[in-house]
Amino acid sequence: MLDNKEIFLQSIVNHVYFAGSIRSFCTTIGLTFFRNNQNYIDRAIAIGRRANEIVVRALTLSYKELAEEIIKSDVYITPYTKDVEELTEKLFEVNLEIQIDADMKLLTSRGRASFDNETMNKVNELNNDALILVNDFNDFCSEIRRKLDSQDLFSYLYPDFYEYIINEIAVYGRDLERIISKKDYTEFYLREYTYYFNELLKKSAEFVRGFLDTSHQDVMDLATFYVDAFANLTEKYLKNRDDVSLSVETENLVREYKEFIISILKRVLNSELYFITPPVVLDKFFTNINAYLFIIDYARNLMKNK
Image 1 (tube, rainbow, N blue to C red):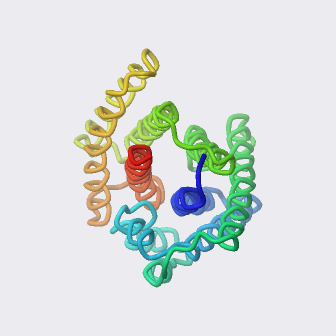
Image 2 (cartoon, rainbow, N blue to C red; image 1 turned 90 degrees about the horizontal axis):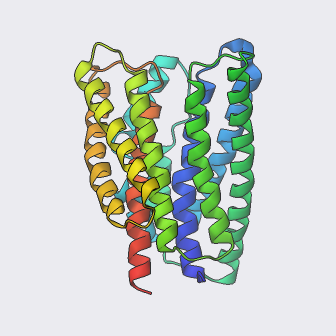
């Protein structure tokens, strides 16, 4: 059973990454509709603001050592986030209300850890509010996906991208339910977690390939390599879910894929690559990788020390 410190740590890390992801997804969704679908734009903005409130509350509850870990891990703000968001603002003529500097100031100003009753009540309330947000966000994306499939709605994002979003945020929901129930990580849970992220990273490689100007064959070929490599790991996993070596194999591949995404971000910011999606999506793919590596390392160290 999780103690207060573990509930606190796991909650904050989940909210910073996943609620941050919902906010990023809502930004992207809002930029991919025509103005005749203002209702969906407005709903995306509203859910994005709710996600931002979750993030800010999580950052406010954090403390010095955890704040340093969050900054170092790039699970929330990466070295490319500010430039990518500014490029998105320029290309789409929108104001994303960039608050990176404010968030960094908030993180670096954190004091000592506190796991008293008052703090834990705030954490528990935050977890419950976040779970409601997850359900509302998934309902919103599922509605869009259904209407895209029936051609009752148009978005510049593929229907399958909405499925990718739904699957990623479902991981958030499952982990929140585990934390609320005070359940420890288990080896089986971590193997399933690795499987889910393996599938998400395969999808992100597919979208890198699908959103990219086809004149860049070198990037297309590398993206295809990672799609096939992650698919191969999924096949191995489904044949033997107890094979612990697959977790190590996945981590090695993820670290290679991370360097690929970094190279893409650099080339986009240098005006060398052209994608038909808001640049913020690419930074989201990067935080996805970082979150997987951070959470797996954290969970393994926690289990080792028990």
